[in-house]
Structure formats: C-alpha cells, structure tokens
Length: 538
Image (cartoon, rainbow, N blue to C red; front, side, top):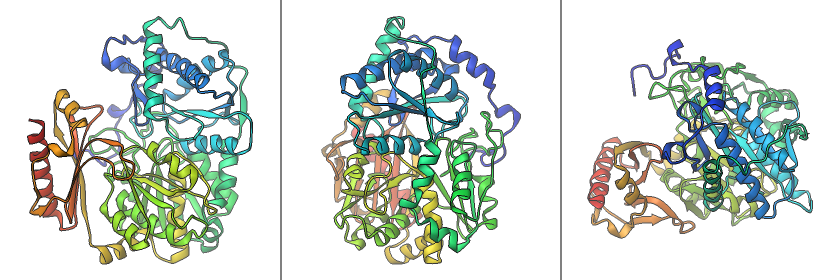
C-alpha cells in the first residue's frame, strides 16, 4: 500500500484523452516487438495506444480475424457489439464496425448509442440463440474492464455468450498478427452505416425479475446506493430504480474518461476495481447512508458490496454468503447443480458446499471454465475471487455466461430484504460455524524463464511434505473439477493452502494463500510457499 492509495486523484494522475485517441490512430505496431503484438489474456486483448499496444491496426486486424474465425465456425447470425466508458472504446468500436460491415456481418449496436455492460452483451447473445433462429449470434465487447483510463480492451464472445476459450483466442490472435505483419492488406473496411439498433438496456432490465426478487427489494424499502464508478452500468442503475420502484440512489452519475473523481488504487493508479478498498474509498466513506451500497467496474462484470457494519466486503466472503443463500432459496434449480469456484477462491466456499450437500466444481482461473455448466444448468453458480460471478434464473435456465456485477449487487439487497440481515452479518455467522479464514494475495519476483517453468510445473515436482506445520494433503497442477491445467501449482493441507501462478504482464508470480488458523499462520504459509516454489524452480 502506497502513501496516496485511497486518496482523491490529482491533476497529475489524469491522462490526456485527446493525445490517447491521437496515438490510437497515429502509432502503428511492429509485431516483431512482443509488447506490440495482439495477445488475448483471460479477458481479451488489452493495452494502451501510448505503448503501441492498442491501436487502430490492432483492432482492424483483430476484427478481421474474428470475422474469419466465426465464418470458419459456421456462425452466420448477428454480432452484438457494446462498449464501455474508456477513452479508447469509442474509436475501437468505430474501427470494428467498419470492418464488420465491409465483411457483410449483420451488426447490432446499442439503440441509444450508449454504453453497454459486458453482461448485457452476453444476455443479448443468449436471448437470440434461445429463440429458435436457424443461425447463431455472437458478440464483441470493447472494454479493458477495471484497467486504468489509458488502456483499451477488446474481447470476443462466441455463441455460448461467454469469454472465448483459448483455442479461439489463440487462433484469432495469431491471425491478427499475421494480418498486421502483412500490412493490413487482408482487412476489408467500409463506412459503418448498415448497422441495426438493439435495446440492450431494455431487454436486460425487464428480464431482471426472472433472476432477482425485485418485488421483495421494493417492498422492503431498504436504502440502496449504487455507484457505477463512471462505468457502463450508469443508465442501467437508473433504469432499474425507475422500472422496479426501488428506494435506490445512483450515488455518482459522472462519466469522465479521465476518472478524475476516483480515489487511487493500492499502487497510486486510477483503477475502477470495486473489490479494492483503496479504489472504493469514497464509496465506503458513505456506508452509513445506505443499508446496502454497491460498486461496479467500467463494464459492470465485477461487483463490490459495502455494508454499514463491515464496510467493503472481501469478495471471497460475499461469494460464500451468496452461495449459501442462493442454494437455499432457489427451488427451481436442479438438485444436483454444482457450485463453481476457481481454485484460488476461499476454502470457506468448500465448507459451505459440504454443508449444503452440493458438489463443488473447482476450475482454473478464468470465467470461461464455468460456461458449459451454466448453459446446461449443471452448475448453478460460478464465481471468482476477483469479484466476478453469475448464476441461473429462478427456473434454472442460463442468465449470462459472462460475469455479471449488476445481479450480484442486486442480490445483496435481496438477501437483506428477505432475511433482515446484511451479507456481512451472514458472513459473520459462517465464521462462527466454519471458522474465520485469513486470505491474501501477494507477488514474488520471477524471471520470464521462471514464469514459463512455473506455468508448466507438475505437482510431483514438489518435494515438501508439510505446509506450515501441517501434512500436505494435495499437490495440484490440474483443477479437481475438470482436470484442466491450472498454469501453476496449488498445495493444500487440512487448514491452509497456497496457489502460485505466473503473472501475464509483470516479472512476478502471484501467491494466493489462506489459513483457517489465523494471520500468523497465514504468514508462515506465504513464507513456505515462496520456499517451495523457489526450490521447484531451481
């Protein structure tokens, strides 16, 4: 934590938006430079035009590659496209539309030329594909999610509505880089006039009554505050308030691509992370004014839950409460529907799952792993420790296959309205029943070679037999739920665990650790984690 974390942004922290957009058009990448190539992470291609990492050439080539990919996959239906409030999102959307229209793709954009949350695009794709059309729809979301204002992002959602898997993104990225290397000769472009309007907001908001008990929230008259953090959910929260008659205040209605109204994150950067106490400092300061106060990031795929008694809830804590509440209050869900979690999420979820008699489905990091289960109803809830989750409708059918911060925020109000207790009060009860875990993620230095080896490490390479005084019960390099490689390592004992994964953007590896024996034991686990991993890496 740095000295200015949690304090208001200053003029020197703000980007020059005009210069950012100018760089988008004027700078041209050299794909022989690794940092200037198209690279899809867990949520699409991200970068800044200032670094020649997110420029017009990247988006033109990537869109052309998506057109070729969807054609090869037999996807001939409409493509839904939405953008968030980042400064680079509008230029990138315009570029994409020019390429899509020139390739005769039927494109649907926001009917009001507004901003579109990621879950609204996923919802639109699934709605179309459930309607019995002979063709299948897919989508693009122009967003770097919670990244700083200087960044842009571009992600593809195929017909299942969720994040594209690595087979798709690898193909798209490889082809996009080939197109750039070829001087963009294979890119078709035209004026983006032949696009259709789609009411993302109306379709999404009207459907909320099929997944959240909006009547209970309205009738309870609880005081709700919703902060879009300058993101795409602004108009959605206004519409939700008006459509359902909620006692809800949108506490911040400002949209500004510099995000000058934000407080700085832990590293003194402006970042719209609703799970960060530093980024949410100005929101948390108003916790006494509301019964439930929530935040969303720029594309509303993440949530932050603030209560008067606890302030900002740890995402792991809220996921555990949400799971316990939902599986006890959704009789329309399949009795064998599993609980989905990523392997770096809290073991509290494991203990809640066991108490519910539900199967736990533990998968690698990345929301894409939950998609098949959400589609067929075999997984009713999928959640990540980074404050991203989605779940099924009342009747057990799919809602979104991408993260939805809006429904998770509304669920907090439903929990209070139906039980009379805040989510943080419910979590306190869970700790009385199962113990109070200490959880933290830290970084450790690693070279590129060490990161590459860590990503391929096998659990059998770990020689240690104990973890902070307890016998090791599992050494995992594949996720228990689906057997997929985790791109790292997880070591488990009875009351603690750690996971180590290489960073995709920095020369560090991330250590996630948790202990049910307190903060001091957690520190021991973290120290041993470093020793165990360093020994394995040589």
